[in-house]
Length: 322
Image 1 (spheres, rainbow, N blue to C red):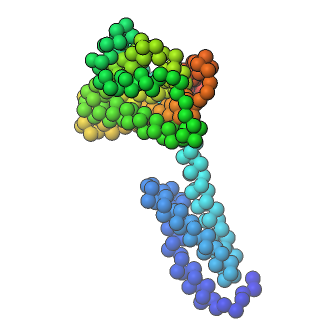
Image 2: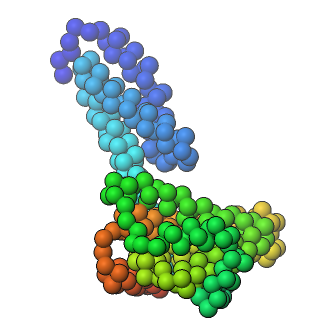
């Protein structure tokens, strides 16, 4: 291979100055990054290597050096961008497959959470629909009046407000779910309380609005997202109860050790609950206040309930067990 006028010393210095960095990148690619910091380092070293390759071609380095650098660049590219694609695929699998499996495996905890939520919900609904004054014992009169006024007509808003309202609903839904989950750290007692409290409040509001003649408007607005939102809250409570139970039944571990062992299970439940609450917020923001007749919204809501039920009952059954 013909060499240009640059001295061999310049080329050797170029390689020597960068050899340590190339070796570090080769080591990271070979064993795989073990932390976020190492992933960031791999990305930085890969970008530097690309610049080094361009410079190396200009210096007319020997073919074996160029080939080695090009191979290293290809491996680093695959490690970096292939891993990102794998992470995206893994997130989909986590929500679509692993979460419903986890929920079915711990069905008793889910059933308890559902009972804690829907029992008070039905109590509040029946009591306030029969006697609207019952609602004033649960919620302040001012809040009830505000609810009544809100649903006095069809809820409509300009399309440009949909995105901001969806963001508001995400914040609101996640706040409720977070309390149902995070307070499970109090040996599950906080999750017990917030599931029952939120169920009672929501049921009371529903029953009261139906009793005062606002039921059709309420149905029109809530039908589409209720299956996602209410189930997401129950799943969040399930995660809280699971965390709380790990602090009670430690299986011979320390409490911290038991909590760590329950971590993957809780993580899968929270991932599913988060997906549900984001879906609920999207529907609530972009669909629920739309100009669709009540019958159409009721059909859409029924379809969402079927989708949620099918996901929880059938998700991950076709794949091989983890």
